[in-house]
Image 1: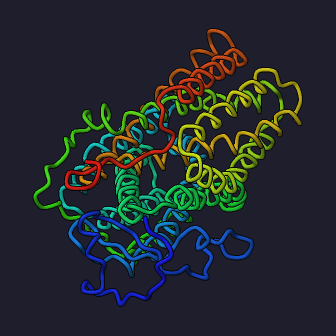
Image 2 (image 1 turned 90 degrees about the vertical axis):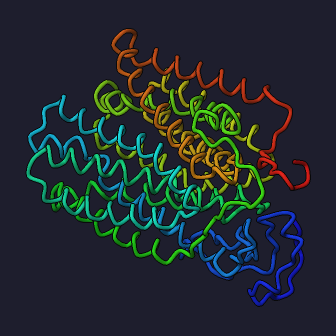
Length: 460
C-alpha cells in the first residue's frame, strides 16, 4: 500500500493508476475527512479512515463511495445494535406474557438461533453469486423494522415464534452481507484493524446505551414499547442502508474460483477464525447463560445491581474496541487475541473467588476490555482471511462458528452448575480460556493476518 500521494483525482476511470489492474483493490491515500462519527465527545473516525481511491477486481472506481460507505455502515450497525439491545433482554419475559410456557419460551429462542444459522448458510452463497451485498442489507433492515412493529401488537406467543424466526433470518442476512461489504470497502487498506475496531465500537456504544435505557422505557410504557422503539430504529437503519454506495463485486475474468464450500472454507483459510471463535465464545456463553442468576440470587445483589454490572462492562467495550483495533493493526491478531483470552482468565478467576461487590466491579471493567479484544480481533480475522471470491460465504462461516459456539456454551452452563456449582463453572471456563490463550500464543510463526494471494498477483 502506498501512502503520501495527495494529488486530487477526478474519479473517472481514465484518471486511475492502471497498475491497480495487477493488484486489484489497491487503495491510495488522498486526504482525510474533518468529520466525526461519534458527535460530541466521540472519537473521530476520520483519524483512522483515509479518503481513498480504489479499483475493484473489474477496475470499477469506488473512490467516491469508500469513506461514505464506512460512515453509513457504522450508522447502520449502531442502529441495529440499538434495536436489538432494546428488545433482546426482554424477549423471554415478553414471550411468557403472551402465554408461552417455559418450554415454549425456549422454543422461541431456539427457532431464532436455528433460523440465524440456516440463514448464514444461504445468504453468503447468494451474495457471492450475485456479487452484491447492499440488497441483502436493505432488505434485512426493512424486515427487522416490520417484524418488530408487528411484535409490539402480537397477541399470542405463536405469533412471536414466527416473528422471531423471521428476525433470525433477517439478522443473518444483515450480518453476512455487512461483513462482506466491509471487506470489499477495506480491501488493501493498511488501517483495516483500526477501522474495524471503530466500526464495531459503534455497535458496542449502541448496545450499552440500549441496555442502560430500555429498562426505564419498559417500566414507563410496558414491554410492547421496546418493540415499537426497535421498529422505528430499524426503519432508520433501512434508510441509512439505502444510502450506502453499492460495492458491486464481479467475478475476476480468467481467474480460477476458490473452493467456496462452507466446509472447505472452515478447514482452509477460515480455520484460525473458527478456532478463535470457539476458544472465546464457548466458555463465555457457558458462564453468561447463568451469570445473571448467580449475581442477583446466589450472591444476593438483586436484578438492579446485575443490570448495572452488565451495563458497566458494555460501556467499557466502547473505548476497548478502538484500542483493540489499533493493537491488531500494529501487532497482529495473535498477541491481541492471546491477551484478550488471558484477561478472560482473570475475569473468570475473580468470579470464582469473588466475595465482595467491589471485586465484581473490577472484574466487569476488565471484562469490557477482554470482550473488545476478542471480538474486534475475530472480526478483523474474518474479514482479512476471507478469499475475495468467497467473502460473503466466509462471513457466513464466521457467523455459523460464533452461533454454534454460543449454542454449545449455552447448553453446557446449566448442567455444569447443576453437577458441580457456579464457582466450578467459572474455574472450568478459566482453564478453557487459559488453554486457548496458550494455543494462540504458541501456534504458528506469523502474527499478522495476510489476505489470501490470488492467481495473477505477486506471491500467488
